[in-house]
Image 1 (tube, protein in one colour):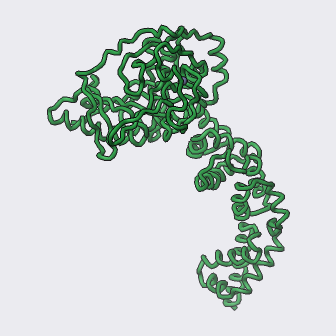
Image 2 (spheres, protein in one colour):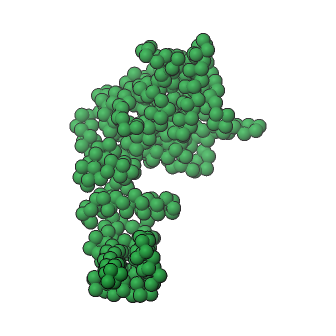
Length: 485
Ligand SMILES: [Zn+2]
């Protein structure tokens, strides 16, 4: 029997705020342990929380980007729980009145588009970070109280690949919206994964297991492949899936039980008495909506439409908002979208990858690259010369036309001049000419190479190729005539 998986995700996103959710402590990453703390985020009795308005804004902006309905009134609640890394023993979160409801996100997989529906988005505070050593454990509270946005999906995903595609699309949308740095290494994005399987063709969802605290997308994918297989095998052998919380062990490649449902907790949610409800002004929401950036999927479609790009190119260029901005800057200035796309996809992205830098960290601007492309289009320089200049422009910036003039890199011009170089090349390489006349087509290419060499790389390779072909054809004609006489 075949089983169909149903996967839902709860994604925790650290918002890009300067200060924590309910106090003024810094959220900067990497400070020495317990140096960014105060009575509020350490959970001292009687300390009063103050809501971070920017965290509310970023959550609403995320909701608007994802097509959610924004709750007119929202509130915070206490979730009672014993957290070893949260001394006040409750977390301030949102229970029945979250900031955002509904919404969804399209994923594309194997040329198919599928909408993954969202249940809700709410805002809460993070807890501290425990580290377990051989003989003791330590807690760092720098992370305690950092604003976390939790995005909860419906169980709409039917494979590990779909969950992976959703996480990528979500990360891209959040980066476009500028609400989070989405840095996985720094724990900005973590998720809990709910998964169940049911016999193919049936509707009722199976018993789900929850895999907690995943912090890489690859980990989610691997854990899901394993867990779907495990649950399917269990059902096929007549067993039952237990509702339980699991932990993924990447070294063993297995999901292991953390706790069973029997010790499920009653969180005793109640409204946080130290915070007022959140009343959002409709005018404010509309102002935020008007300021939203273009969504990645809309931008892909527009790049195809406006610049005549292949869908593949549009996908690569819009993966990163800065790269898409850079592309549009180049394409608009040089007027050739496909050339701009080719240069960025092959050369610029390679240079960025090799140097481990972002566009903001290199000297190349859209203007510089557009000017370089224009020099090639006008045949002032040839493509190899332009490619040779790029690494220097990438490192130091500068004017492509200036470099070409200063170094005499201009293309060796017209038909006459290149024609003379072709004659020279044929004279110097009689053997190659004979090879061609004997039927070896590749010999023509060798002669073009000689012409390029004689011009010190500055000839127009296309024109050189054309003239070599013409002159060889003429020589062949003369030989045939002579043989006939
Ligand atoms: Zn604090």
